[in-house]
Amino acid sequence: MRKKIIAGNWKMNKTPSETVTLINELKPLVVNEDVDVVFCVPAISLTTAIEAAKGTNINIGAENMHFEESGAYTGEIAPNMLTDIGVKYVIIGHSERREYFAETDETVNKKVLKAFEHGITPIICCGESLTQREQGVTIDFIRQQIKVAFLNVTSAQAKTAVIAYEPIWAIGTGKVATTEQAQEVCKAIRECIAEIYDTDTAEAIRIQYGGSVSADSAPELFAQADIDGGLVGGASLKPDFGKIVNYNK
Ligand code: 13P
Image 1 (spheres, rainbow, N blue to C red):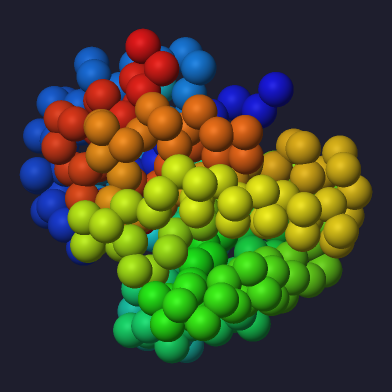
Image 2 (cartoon, rainbow, N blue to C red):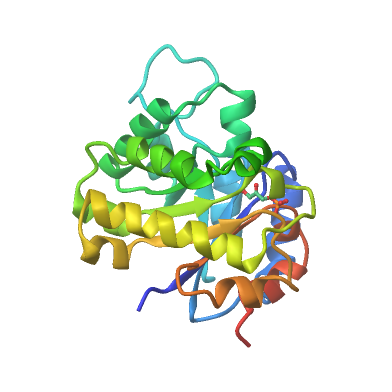
C-alpha cells in the first residue's frame, strides 16, 4: 500500500520571515499520519523553513537544484548545499521551469540522477499543454517525458521517486482536471514505469496530481487508484492546505 504524499509548491512566494509565520500557522493543521507532508519553499527560505518545521511532521523540499556538483554556475544551488541543511525532497522539471528557464527533458534527467546520487527524493514533474490535450497526444507526450526523465535511473531508485502529473492548462487557472482525466494519465504513467522496469517498481512509485487542487477537489482526486497525493500551488499557502492534507478525515 503506497502512502500518500501531499506537497505544497510555494513557487516564488513568501519571504523568510513570512515563511516562519505560515509554517507556524499551518503546522497544527497538516497533521495526518496517513500522509507524507512536504513544503517546497524558495531556496532562500530553506534553512528558516527547516528550523520552523523542526519537531513536526512537515518535510522541507526545494523547488529546483542544479545537476552539477559545484562550480561556475552563478545563481544556482548545488545538491550538497541542500543535503547539508537537511533538505529531503526537490521538485524537478516543473512546467514553469521548463517554460521560463529553458529546462528540458534532458536536464530533468540529469537533475533526477544527481538528486538520487545525493539521497534527495525528486518530485519529477510532467504534463501536457492545452494544445497537446486537444490534439489527443497527451499520453504519448507524457510517456516521452517519463522515459527520458528515468534514463539510467535504477529500479531501486525509481521505487522511491515521486512523479507529479500536472496538466499545464490546469496550473493556477482554477481549471482542475476531471478525476477521470487525472486518473487516466496517472494510470498511463504507472504503466509506462512498469514497461521501463517491472510491476514491483510501478506499484511502489508514487504519482501525484497537480493543477488547481483545492480542499473541494482533493478527496475525489486522491481516492483514485493511481493518484497517490498532490502537488499543490496556490492552496498550499492558505489554511485550506490543512483540509487538503486531511482529505480523508
Ligand atoms: P496550482 O495549485 O496553483 O494550480 O499550482 C499547481 C502547481 O503548479 C504545483 O506545482
